Length: 259
Image (tube, rainbow, N blue to C red; front, side, top):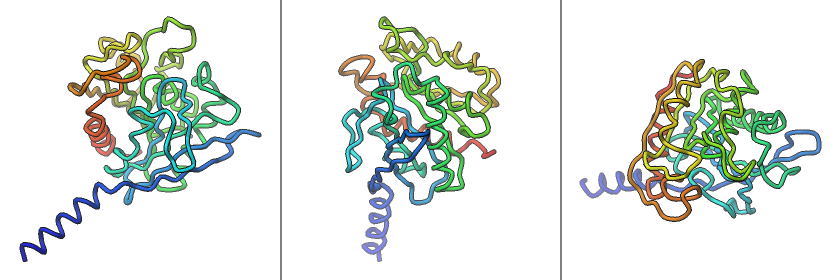
């Protein structure tokens, strides 16, 4: 009996951490424009999310669902699916080579409205916009531009709050009117983030700017490794603690009451 119980428990544990097969999808978002994305569906979804990677946004999706450029979100979809959150991870639209100068635009919001609508068609659960670094601007813009057609909540991680040395490379979240965000917001930031455009000490100001949000919280990450470029790896991308940070995000998202 003990052996049988142990085997059943082991099978359940292995099943809980099984990798979900990625699906590569492509949808029309604007006249003449298509958007490719990776879709990972949780077995029993309690929420869905659009994951916006930082940098220029051109993650380069291959037919098997792998990507040329990874990162905390682009390469971390499985971490969310394991906790009941289905995700889409978008590439750049067919009329763009990158998202520099585009993330706050109406056209980008229109693309993201199509992704949110897709997720709502798949599962009747809340849809969140989750961004990291430059991707936080995409998430925030979806909330401010789309309003009722936008996400049910935001997660802004390693958020860019300072201008960069090269014009257009740093997508500052305040490019959109943060006072118009009317959904719950979770801020996630590593205490020792060394990227010069994402200082941790900007979090109180960012919290204050989200004045219309019904709930704003901050998760402060610590630990992990700090290897590589401080704005493309290390603490900025939660290196070494990706799964733990994703779990903290998922736990918070699932605890927020649905609208």
